[in-house]
Length: 105
Image (cartoon, rainbow, N blue to C red):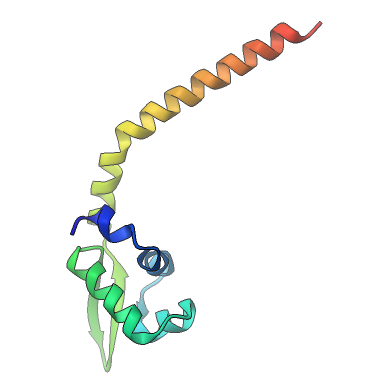
């Protein structure tokens, strides 16, 4: 499964959002997201298999964290589209500025 397909699931995006600022255990994520433990575990498995998160053991817990690689690849893929839209938005801004200056008495 590719990153876009994995992140298309809203529950997985919620997990990724929760892991954005800190590592967390399954229990932490269950509590923070109000999801069942089996659901969180299922989504974490998919995220892990896609390389979006990694896991490490800490005593009896498994601690999950985001991995930058898939997001870098996604960012690189999106770059030309951002450039395209930035150009369109800049052109719109120029058009609106010229239109409003023409209307002023």
